[in-house]
Image (cartoon, rainbow over all chains, first blue to last red; front, side):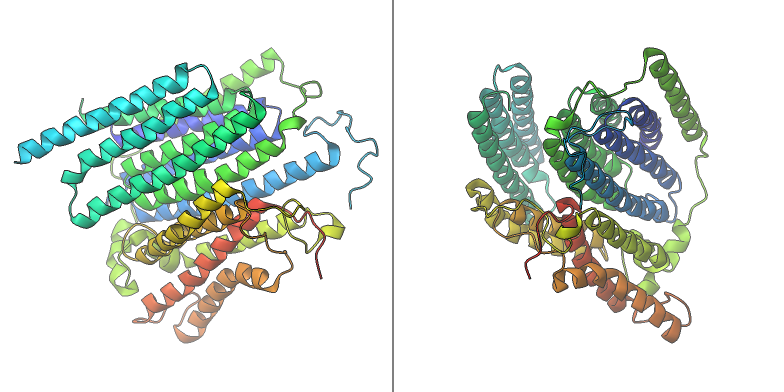
Length: 114
Length: 97
Length: 315
């Protein structure tokens, strides 16, 4: 069991954990966390593909590495937008929930939102 | 000579690891936030310092050794600031912070 | 079992344990702290996979900047977690979800175990043409030379994310500055950290960007460190967050992708192909593009973390 295979298995476990957290946890912030976990698990699977493609004196294929770097930055941008949405929802509704039947906590029903 | 250096490295790194272990045990077992903070800063301070000391003879060049010491100094800075902030927050809001 | 194997196995168990804690922890704040720890451990795994550039990016952006974002959000949402209105999954649904997720994980694990030992690789081609680009780091060459179109689009994605975040402001706040509307004195402890760390951090960030042409490093990692230095100076209240309608801010945000796109179009005119570099001039052009990329990233990441404007713009 090389370190690359172990890392790939860890990536698979992280995808499973992240998926469970995304579906089972009702709070949006926890969903964002689980989504990030899933993303980094997928990147680890990329990592094992890169390591197994070692050739020409390089220890790992550079193309999947570049894709993972791009992926990490884009995942951060998506998380930032998602967090901004959650915080805006919190400002307007006084609570953060994806439950469509939850009553808003503000007395004016968010009519103040610009 | 290299045997002496290796032995020195093993002893120093072992002592550093012991401090990290002690710090972790303190984090898990001490009763309140301030004493846990005390344990953690000892791990940062002494533990990392001893590990860096043990790694110094194994560096490739003087520059690598200086970089290791610089890493230790930066960790000191960050750790001290974090400890101050956590301590102040604990004192203001009680241990439930 | 060798020491390295023991390290790998220990690290693997630790990462899965910390990730499980992040999913199953009680409070959002604890889960977020667990995520930051998880990110740092993940960088160690990337080093064991011999992908040092990725390890740097994961530590800086994946764990560092994302951690700041999530911890800030968790702290602000502390009062808003209502247990009553949340419809948690029932026990049976949870079991079904867990079963399906285990199935997905096992399928992926099967794919990982069935990968051939020596897969198809683009490494030989990357190394062959490395000398022409003038770079020594093949990952940087892939990012800025071989697949530069992807990287430019990634910069555009960052700009779109900033536009998306800013558009969440109330109408009357458009153009204002993000952050709370109080005039704060500099926080003394953080001010000390910022004053000592920021010069060192700027130096380290520029060094990592510059050295990324030949050794592990690069524009994203260097830019993330510069972004962190600006963020810590803003957190210490030594400087105000800029107004979002400031001309210099908007110019710096788009400078990266615009310079990149201009270089690509100029390549179509002067070097015979969209995003082609003229031979012999590749490295100066690459460094020129990367400089603007670093500035863009250093300005974009703090703006994404700061969030939408929450104050009226001063004219």
